[in-house]
Length: 451
Image (cartoon, helix red, strand yellow):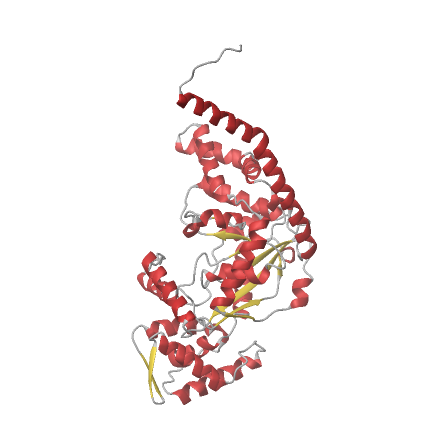
């Protein structure tokens, strides 16, 4: 037992490595996990005393546990059996398919990531790019929401900045769980988005098993009281206007609702911008009849570089105003059950979103030029003034500046983007300016009487 043993160096190194891994897995890693878990629990306890809507236990469950709960749900088990029978595959193969869907959908929420760097990045980015303003906002109605109900913020979708802007504005109230599309399933973005509590959706999936796994996750989250955010239009607006609802996610939520149980409150949220970062890509996609508008990587990097250079040299001070408005909350319990409840709720939500879409300087001037046909500075000022008077009668929140300042700043912005040129008092549309001006005019067109 005490005799020395001769070993090759490679064997000795392997033994040491295996010993180190065993020690770490049995002693070190559990201690480290325990340390960070205790720290996270203390952070969550502190946060819940400050948040208007505390983080629900469902959102804090371990991702592995949530995936297992989802897979062994009776409705998913039946969907796996049906999928195996329909596609003539073994049930274990169908189970593995459902497991891959669950792993893709279920987030891994981190309160530390959300409320430390996530919230701060959202605030910094929002303020760096825009002047952030609140539009219509009924504080009493929002603060009086049932604390035991599930709150779902339902928004129009103008830009990928929507996620950032709303996260920044709502972060003091609660942690949002977003439904995000396939664009976010790229590494390392996917891990960051999962840590922020978002769940992924395949927009083009047609398999019944996938839809069942997604539906059940959304229903479990809703029944668990998770505060969520969704875009019922199903994608970014390609023409600037608020579109019609796609009822998939909404239908999942309504199907699981039981009268007398936990109520579901939908809060309409409307967003508008003086400049949407992706506007030209969206317009091009709309004219091309498809939704493939991902810009080339070089275009993104060069645009970011130009922006920071102009910012550093004082040539550019931001993209104008970004505004968020909150409409009248809609309680699901107030709707009588009927065969088309989802459609009725969807249309009512979109109507409430349209009613509070913020009115900003760029859409006003764009409408004066593109719709009213104003082609001189004085005519544009007259048109904008008339629109402001009409909107004032409806008690809409309006820009604080006077008409002359609104037109001056916005025309300078349009000229910088090569949308218009001005010669003396005359204004002329150039290049793709007509399409871009229509895009911004459409965002507020529903506020006015038809011409």
